[in-house]
Amino acid sequence: PTKKRANLDEISAASKFERLEQLALEGLKSDDIEKVNGVLSIIKRYRQSGLDNKGEFGPENLAFKAVRSKGYFQALFDHRNKLRAEQLSLEEEMLRRTFEESIG
Image 1 (spheres, rainbow, N blue to C red):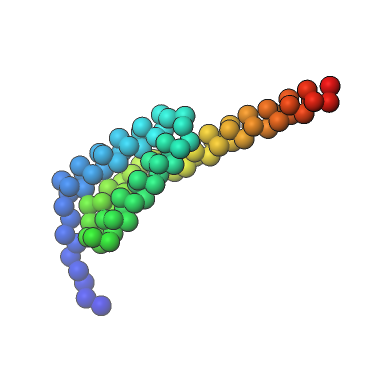
Image 2 (cartoon, rainbow, N blue to C red):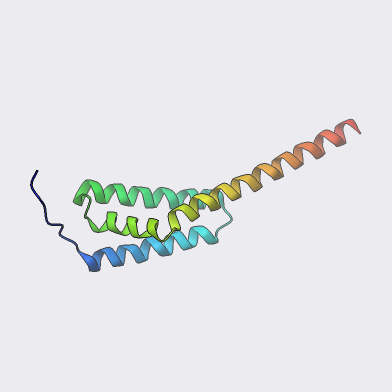
């Protein structure tokens, strides 16, 4: 194997990171599970597009890695799971009340 020197476009990567970071923060502020899912989907597609076009050292992938290393990606997954758990708890409570009203 030959050694390749990475061509890092630091300015582009920093700019793309700022955009992804802002998107992640918007998702973390939202209580809409669909918005959080949308943010996760955008971030994943953004990374994949960068990998497809410019490879491992492309600015999109470097921006994704920065978002991941700052904990935003995991925080979005955790936030989505919390919202889903709350949603399921509410649904379960509504079913319980409906059942109690129907028998009582």
